[in-house]
Length: 175
Image (cartoon, rainbow, N blue to C red; front, side, top):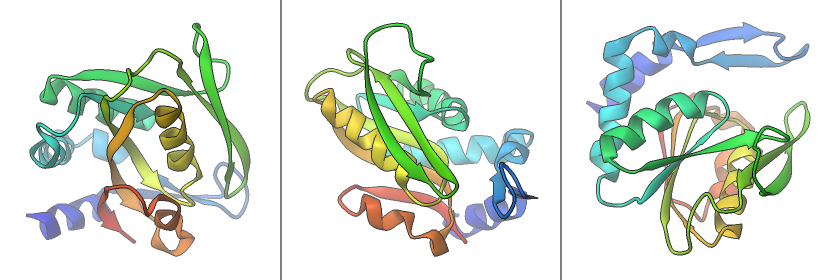
């Protein structure tokens, strides 16, 4: 099933040239959301692999919110949003990081996860690894541990997985 699922994911992703700026080819995850069978396969595959291993799911803005909340629901655990700077109302931890086309800052509520909770981090695409590394730092700053990271697509040539070598990382497909 893994190879079949990977092939379906790769075929469903859409390339958007010059987004968000010239020279960047954006890997668009939204066609997967339009295919309920494929979307549900991704969720089911993740849930089967992670059941009993996590206490909460953290989804990264914005596409990580979608799959992450579905995975949390199926696992019967809570969901935590990791948001762009200035979007969360309560006291936050912040972490800035580099993107392939600039810098950004992510935030998490300081009380989003408790000490010793095991957190599953979910996002759509792993590129340079900055977003995921910043998210892991935020979770650990709250006193929780990153149990695993689940990604739909990894862009292997950008080397982002190297920034996450200390974590249990699973990607549906690497291109």
